Image 1 (cartoon, helix red, strand yellow):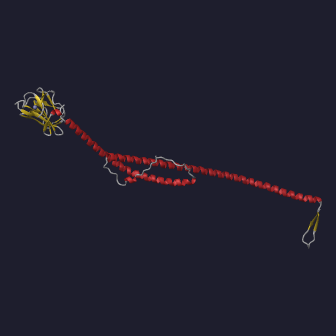
Image 2 (cartoon, rainbow, N blue to C red; image 1 turned 180 degrees about the vertical axis):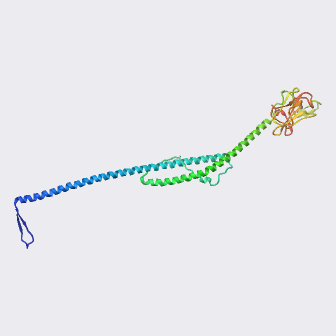
Image 3 (cartoon, rainbow, N blue to C red; image 1 turned 120 degrees about the vertical axis):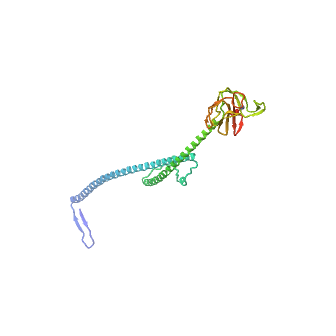
Length: 334
Ligand SMILES: [Zn+2]
């Protein structure tokens, strides 16, 4: 084979004579060497790629571990924040309950001591918050970035709770002081009502209702009658009860003996002063067991039935006087 090498016009053409084996060998060697180069490059690059891949995988793994750690930490943090939030809500509810208790105490005071007025400004300090009320709404997951916001809100919440606690701390001793005052007033009123009840009881006890002797037969009634001694019509200011000398004479009601004396017409007589302007008189007695100024209770033995004074025989003249006017004793004694 001949190879002709043609250059520009001024220069001669060159001619190379090549033998057949050379023609085959040289391209074959060239192809072989290029192939070898390519293969070796490929092997090297694949080695590099494999190394890179390994290192990348390791890095990925490392990254994954880090991310997972961070996620865990964030999740923990989220839980802590949510727990704190729950605590804040719980705390608010408890403070609200304390507030309610204080209000109940306030109502208690108002009940027993309505004069006790709430000091100005106190009402304004009452903060109402109904944590136990209805709740609801869409569930929204807390994202990592929102934790900060929740944290800030929590800080505000805790500050508010602190203020609430300060208010409660300030109000409760005052309220307790006033409760003590109300208790004292209530105690005084209770004493007063007990006294009133005692007075009523005394008045009831003092009403001359007890039959004043053992015999229950009347010999003369209250009002106008024919006088038993001179036969002329006369006013009888009481009732005459039959009996024998020495029969017991009882106090018809509780009271004070204002007279235990003797007079020509009344004979031996006793006057007992009862409450509400009432008096009971006992006349013609044989004997007397009480003296002026003595305190007697209903049914006490005060003397003995007799026949002293202006009398035709043993009997008890019993008389009830109301506001200095004689009234029918049968309206009282039973
Ligand atoms: Zn009489």
